[in-house]
Image 1 (cartoon, rainbow, N blue to C red):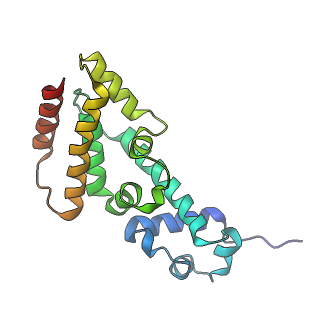
Image 2: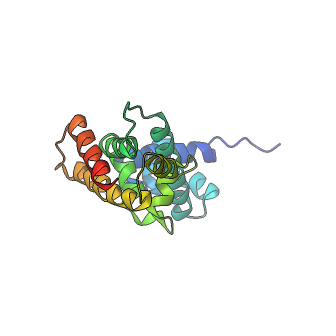
Length: 181
């Protein structure tokens, strides 16, 4: 009778994700992960051929976490792109290491930011359609302008240079929308 494996792929991935969330993916090493789980590195490399394979799965889990965060983020603003902007900026505040992993790291591979943001929910496409319905002549161009501002704000959060209140952020996003629509 084969003995039951105590260290499963799910345990390894969940622990690695928690470690990446707390300390950044650059600190997810086989030794540190094994110490967190309470095992040797052998079970990790039984499940994953190498750490790159594990990093790919951590990244995918981070994409899903952002998608869930965005879908559950609440704001009462109807202006196109404002909800997306607030969620993105606040994600940088609340999930600093995951934000850096998703939007500022080489683990993104061939995925573009549009693809990451749009996700399974079609969040960006919905916002572009909402802008078109509101009378915007070039909603894709508007998205690009809004996106440069939104991404810049989120990056400023990471450097400690963003000190606007949520109300001030909303006002600025609304102003950008009005100026381009």
